[in-house]
Length: 212
Image 1 (cartoon, rainbow, N blue to C red):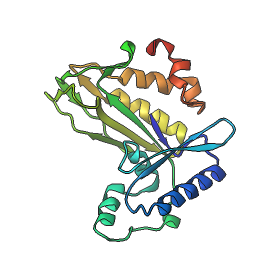
Image 2 (spheres, rainbow, N blue to C red; image 1 turned 90 degrees about the vertical axis):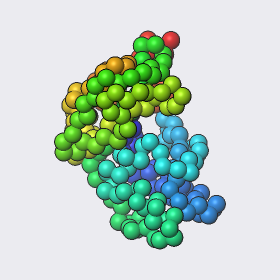
Image 3 (tube, rainbow, N blue to C red; image 1 turned 30 degrees about the vertical axis):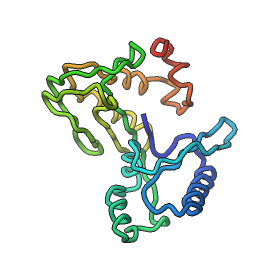
Image 4 (tube, rainbow, N blue to C red; image 1 turned 120 degrees about the vertical axis):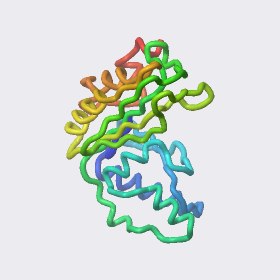
């Protein structure tokens, strides 16, 4: 599950983190799309983890809250053209949540579940976005990442976005293989998640049966 904006970041930490990311890119002369990742501890200190020099799975939530198309901007930069907006024009609004729908069985330690999809129904509606490659009779291979679909929702605030995601998940139908759709429901219904009390040990603490 990915979210934007980060529920636990204060405006001050977000500004400092952004400035440090920009400094790092300038220091190495980087001029394309990329994502710098930080880890935040409970004291509000953050630490550089890595930089991915590519579009990441999470880019959709950024696009939803900023009203930008990062893929188009990446192509513009690669062609030697400037960005179509300035940093000052980027003003996040609302809240976006993304659920990665994977071909995996959470009850078996998230074991991948390749196979043939016999039926697919994709949700839609205002503020609902689906990025996927699957279709009826699609064969999920065992050789690649198990992700089938990115289900993304946007609404006025986090509470509304969680509610919309629950509704959107209820419309997803993927038959013929095991998926993690029900597990996504469990995360969204979890009290700690709803309160924004999440960290890198969230699954181990709240769903220990899935990681035995």
